[in-house]
Length: 252
Image 1 (spheres, helix red, strand yellow):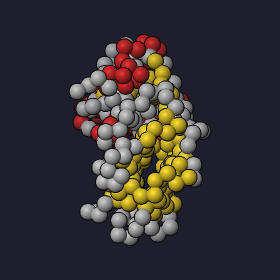
Image 2 (cartoon, rainbow, N blue to C red):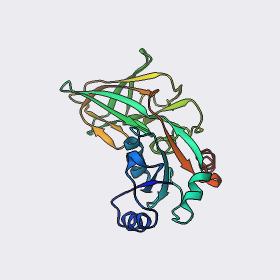
Image 3 (tube, rainbow, N blue to C red):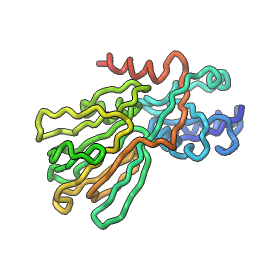
């Protein structure tokens, strides 16, 4: 089995990268059977985007702190682990945003797209679903649209719901909503298009992030789940993505 290894810049990940490539060899991403990611969730998100052009399975090993998308690090029996791993198919969100100068920005997000205020001024956001305005004005610090795999990340810290990995749902979650004060967000089918319109963008400037890709001074954005991109992430059978998401709901 031919592996392509990629690692974060952290010292521990780089040290393990040197050791594991010496043991198993290193192949180009285009020529490998499986991509092995060493690092944390940030490195995994980068590898997921890089892999879209190649369509290889991805197996991550944690060299960071949380590593929710990762497996435990163990360089022994790597071929057997990969062969026995369970697969979780992940589709990214496609984001298109327009900034205050009229420039258009496009990015993919496997976890979430988040619109956030840039200054002391609260964000005022109009929200539409499939072209229909559902909320004329959300006053808040920001708003998140999360995938099932992303529902346990920033979305969860904003008190959003955890979604089963195979659910065909997206979580729309406000961040520190002021008005409507008791609005907790919405669960949406994954075939909808969600649109955000920034009100008073000159005064209430806002940025948008697709995972770890950020654009500033945004006036509008549309997000939908991709139908042309997907990747397969591998996990050890005893700690599959489905099991992790269930377990997360019982964590303190």
